[in-house]
Image (tube, rainbow, N blue to C red; front, side):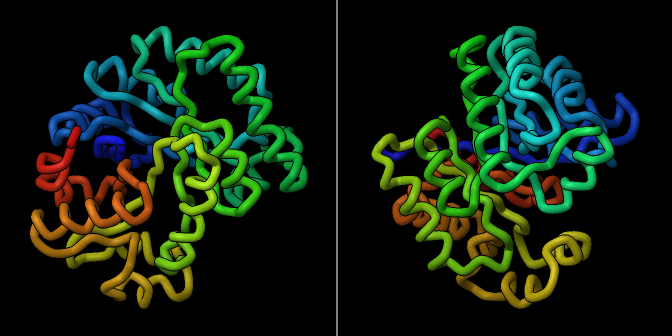
Length: 268
């Protein structure tokens, strides 16, 4: 049986405490279950920001999206995750990944070794093992794209986010989901929504790189939703039926536009 739909908002933590907590409360007011915060040095430290958000919005779940394993030791991840699980009353989810390609420079700035792909994947597994030893109740969310990372995530995660770029085709995403579903454990499957409605933020196109504008204009794009709330809800039901995906994370700029769909589908 398919897991119920749930929705999160991806929001980088920056600015004053008052501004950040207001954003967190707005996410909760719109009906989203989870606030997801990226891990990168130009923004506030994600775990500190999420602790602040969780205190300000007591119904909201919080999750780093995702911690780059090379930037922390497994023991420190486990310590922080255990603390946040306790301090939020069980509303914390541990998001982990092997790190964005440009996070190599951030690792160097923090005095941490970047390592090979295999070493970074091993660091993810070590962080999960250390966390589960200290805090078995903390849900683990892994973002993965390559076959080895997807297979590892399918084996050990509670939730697997298909870390597809905006230019990734539907067929490629179907293949990614198939790796996860083949493991037989049936973890929750998540996907990103980069744009909702007719407008695509320029900053998102710059981040996504060459080919993004064309990919997002494709009616078959999996990273953009268009149409009425009912049509968008029907498309997400289709994705759950075909991909097994029932958890959708939208960029903060699309949160207001997606809110009617969240109201239609959350928990169903």
